[in-house]
Length: 153
Image 1 (cartoon, helix red, strand yellow):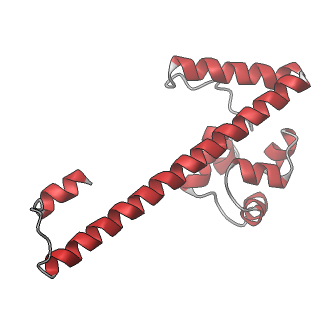
Image 2 (tube, rainbow, N blue to C red; image 1 turned 45 degrees about the horizontal axis):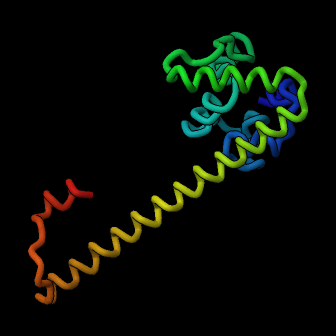
Image 3 (spheres, one colour; image 1 turned 180 degrees about the vertical axis):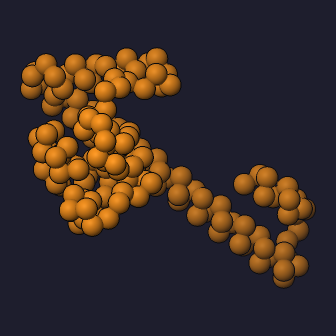
């Protein structure tokens, strides 16, 4: 893993942030003290061109020779090709703009995840309150049966 990281010109903090693990976890991976989790492998596949077979077995090339996953929608493949072009053209302004856009997208995704988690928590609280009222016979509205309630969630 260290060989890959250094070959990409990344420091430990950058790679750890990219694949969403701690620097300590990255250090353990690089020093062969642990194997990557399924989540880490998924992040490596999504965010790097590291050959997972090489990482786990030492066989093959360090870098994945596949260009862009053919299973992705056409628009996504085109966008990734454009990202590759920006990263390899040496245009600092284009790189900075790309970096800002990626940061914006990451923050938007994080905000959306937080909003969904908050809504889920709110929904649970509502169902708890309904259950309390139902137990106290204070609920005046008809409720769905348990199986319908689970389907609605």
